[in-house]
Length: 243
Image 1 (cartoon, rainbow, N blue to C red):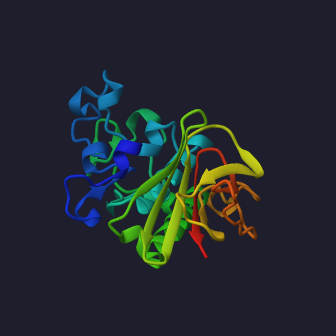
Image 2: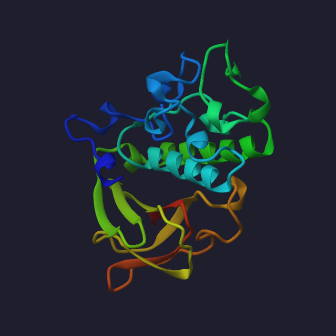
C-alpha cells in the first residue's frame, strides 16, 4: 500500500487517476467470465472488488470496500469509481460478478437497480457520500502533499498526512483484524502538534460498522511522545483533521 500512495513521475497529484475499487479493465468481461483466462487464473479474474473479497453478503468484503474508497479519496490522485461500486454491485453468485453490457452465457450483467436501494447498497452509498464530502471540504486531500509518519507492520497499520496550508489531515489505515479500543492506539503525527477531530470512520454504524467504533465526541491532543491516541477499528480508515 505504501508504494501505491505516491504520485512519482507526475507533475501534480491530480494528474494520476487512482481506482482502489477497480476500473473497467478490472471489472468488465466480454468473454463469458474468462477474460485473460480468469476461470483458471484467479489473479487475472475480472470481478467487482466486493466479489473478489467474498461477495456483498460478506461483512468483511463490505468493510474492505469501504476502506478502499476512503483510501482512494484520502491519498494523492484523482479518484475513480467504476459504476455500481457505490452500492456494492455484485453477482448473486461470486463466480460471475463481472460487468457486461448485456447478457452472456451466465446471465445479465448490466446495472442491477434493485441493489442501489437495498439496505446494503444504502450503507455503501452513505459511505461514498461522506467520503466525497470530506475530500471536497479539505483542500489538503487535493494538494501535492504526502508524508508517512507512522508504519506498524506488526499490526498492519499505516498513517499518512496531507497538508494544504493550515488544513492538515491525518489518515490512519488499519489493514488488520485487531480492534483498538479505549483510545489506546498511538499514532505518530509527523511533528504536527495540537488537537484533532475525527472527520471520517469507515466503521461507523451508518456505513455498516458498529456504534462506538470510531472517535465521535473525542478530540485528542498530540501528546508529548508525538502520538495522538485513538480508537482504531479493524479493516478501517479513520481520518482526523487538526483543529
